[in-house]
Length: 138
Length: 480
Image 1 (cartoon, rainbow over the protein chains, first blue to last red):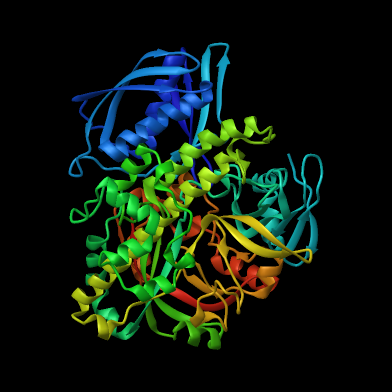
Image 2: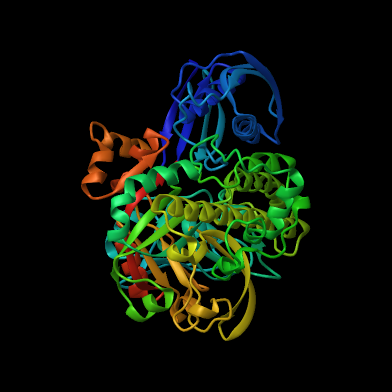
């Protein structure tokens, strides 16, 4: 099952994601990240950005992937609508992110995420696929 | 896994050294706080910090301690300049998140009729929330680098505020050793549009009223009197600081293994203070700290403008001046006496405040008879405190004290509690006006989300690591 849910932490929040494949897992984690930032459903997939990130292991790769999405939002005002993972290994991920430029009149952002942390981070293989846990600093 | 604690007295607890710990843990808390703490993971984090190389004295936790990333929030740890380490996790993502207190010559009676207008003007004039920034402040990369080197001084040189503001900022608003060359392009890019912005979450701008004086002599010296209008600014280094922390955590993960430092938690990653990685982090952290000092200085200028516009008074009539500006997330090289020896130490304060005593050379001259001002925000519905540093703090906690109330409810729990309630109306009934960019923030930041900050400052005062000077009550709150 490809899914995510948000985790509670006294000061911050986390994401628990599941995926049948590693690609689906990274896609679900990204959807979880967006859910923390906004409940907004009206995001047009009108622009496409190619994202390529590296990591020393799967955990670092997950942190770097989600951090890249935060960077795009904060620096380029790019609000993502959909995530297509083209390829993912233990050390490298390539994805196409579709979305649009933040529009204060249409988009309502609920929370500002400061960073994606390594705190209690997990990326694990399960009987039915993959499972991950990651916390963000708010 | 439960952590063994031994009660020392009414407000001190020891986590005895065991296993990989190099020193004891020392927690400041009353019995009720400790009962809550024992169910949380923050004490494990106090214990984890005690395992790091070169730690001097105990791994310390303030009464507002809560679960952080790697280091607990409300943690203080000092490391030997030669044998010790520096850790980005011991400072946090929001480098130099801090508080500035401004005083005015106005009384509550003069401001009350204008408070709605003032709240609107401040909300318009000081950008808050995601993506919001002043269109009239455009920074080139070259200019941004100057901000990183000069801090609040950059803002004053560019017409934002006055030179005397600098006298009343920790480090006079410029942390030495900043080197923009070690800042990534990514951090520069994240910071460029965020200078002069409040941010969201627990960051805020408040118009307060001095409600009660705890120490008359110190209040006189700080220029505080009952019924006076003050302004509190709580923000930090914004995206630039978050990115610096992120960049250097990555570097330190590799450095820790390179230097053979065993980590009980990845987020505690660190490097020796005298290694290239350690020095580079300190130079980058100083840049982010300076960005934060400049940020609070810009907001100060816009607060002054807003008061002038709404009240129709001149700067001379209003005389809005900086009481003090403190860092809550920082690591600094300081000189302390430890076990009869003068030691050069890197003191990490993560969710903790420097609280230097009367007579200390780094306490501003004006305040030298009473001690360095310490600013402790509470929650938006209750009150905040002004304290001064003490000799007790200097001797026991490397000149440090608490920083705030500390969350007790998760955001989800807070939202659940706020459901169906009109938070705005509830605050209004208590004489507090709120302007918030995000409804989620409003619900998540309700008073019940936080400990009563009075309990925190009471423990600190009882322990002798801070002295209460005044209590402030919010009249208008601006939230991101």
